[in-house]
Length: 262
Length: 262
DNA sequence: AGGAACTCAGTACGACGTACGGAAAAGGGA
DNA sequence: TCCCTTTTCCGTACGTCGTACTGAGTTCCT
Image 1 (tube, rainbow over the protein chains, first blue to last red):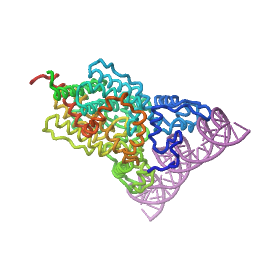
Image 2: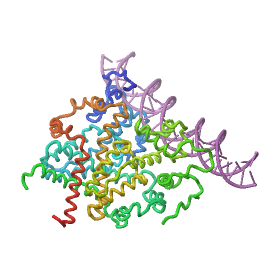
Image 3: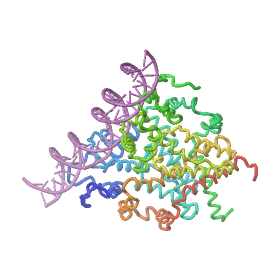
Image 4: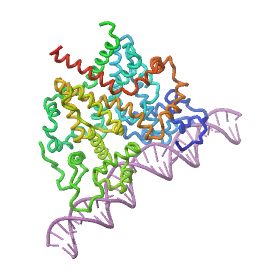
């Protein structure tokens, strides 16, 4: 199917062409020894990843270009390609590194506390690295930090005593929930800081909408909720609220499947 | 409260420069009359939006460029700018149009059925238009179809009898949940069809990982779940499963807040 | 010492969004 | 009828992007 560089023999040390994944795996799991033959490297892989995260944090993920990262490091753009196969792969490494900061819960706690801590860690990870949300990742990077966190979440959910099948579902559910809520919350705050457009300006520019097209008859419920002030009051703890409902539901499931002690 | 376009002299036909939002609102809510003076337009706004959706469906959202959409319509690239202020705005119009297909539940049903139908409609919308997931939208496009669907969801949740505050939270929760799950499911299937890389090839390229770095000792829970076959068995009904847990949790909340009949 | 292996980076190509300006088409007023 | 204003269509061009290619310079091994 693809395409270029079919010729490269697999023995080449970092042939990040053909089976793209293979060398990503290597980069994620054991970054190659500095080098044997050539000149000393001016940078380390870690520095490149950190520069990428710095650029994403400072200017937004849209500005995460090879040229920008290289400039941030004081090297030529093309030099980065000795450390990293390409932009997407750099991004994947950044993602795995973001997951590295996730703390794991105390294993002696009840399962619900552990799962909640996992969710809160995920939430603060998205707050800390909003560009994770824009992550146009086809799939999760199979990195060590990602997998360690996932494994521990599965372990915590397993404490419920649910069968494996439900464990897989619940764990996925928790991660998805946090991501979904994070997306709808983070974009608001992070966009305004990255583009010049503040939230106020945005709503001002949209203000003609309220006078012209919005009608209380067409949107009675939203109007009522809005005027009650409930939107403001409900803002801020979406994560906790959703998590509480969700885990309540899981507890019900546990009881239903194993009504041992009641 | 109303009034209108204070600075921009209303005479300007489509000044989509300065307060970007204003004309987006106009485009979303009442597409301007064909024209008065100049030559006949070769296209309609609807055609442009549909061409955008066609390109996104056929080649993936990464290929959604002004040039591609224009080529698909047989016009020059710059011609599109008479219909649409720019690429991002075209995308916003596409999003609102995708929401247009969402059916609304029968209002005589119990609230839970109505909310479930909303969730299922959202889910099939994401399946139908996977590019909605990549939608790097800072904010929801304030379009009529989006708002109609939201309003109806709020209305359905209001049937629970919960206070406004919780209604807002629950509605947001349902949308976020579906989005979160959709993201983790859709990317798998839609990526493989848009890039040449099938899922099998992907895993093959990653296969060196399993032999080399994956260790049962480091990931015991994932190993156990995997070997039990639970991952396969649990796949496919993540939406329904999560929705069930979530709404169970909401029912608990209803009882807790209003323990009228028990 | 000589060559192999490697790093760094300049140049270049094709894609992108879109600003600008010109040609041509249509309607309204004379 | 003619002309002028308005509007459409779009070719060209600029700045951005990822990255292929190439070559110059650096280090180690034999």
